[in-house]
Length: 190
Image (cartoon, rainbow, N blue to C red):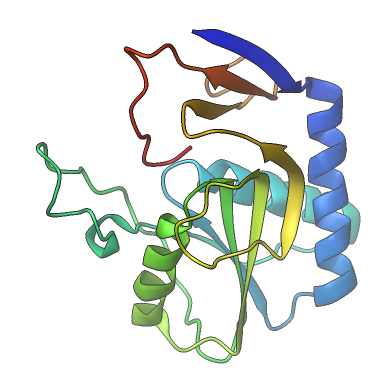
């Protein structure tokens, strides 16, 4: 496997701050807006955005975690069952402007599942999508991000890995892995 650093730590911090400022331009005081991080890796982006928005605005934006396991179109097609993650949405989405957040946009299937899953919590007035990395040219469904940290030209034989400081890395960084032919298999999240 060959790996290449595509977003170093300093650029990662700039991306998060830029995305937070773009959200502020659109959502102002977030009085009718909420952030929903997609489990499992989108919750790290959601938490970091909430923290950055708190630093900039001095307010805490309502943030939740959304599990999409049972809404995935491949749920029953897998040889081994998927283990669900915790959903933490302790507020109604009825009439809210929802910002769905994930680390990597790949085929679009996770976002489609998230749209189905969030309806259980109310009918939003608007839904936007924010991703750190948009893997171009790999979409199976017509889904595009409203806010993007960086677009990456990638192949199906590659994988994007977002590493979070304090969780799985000494620094926030993003790697692009090129898999060898024996490793070349589809990945659900990246």
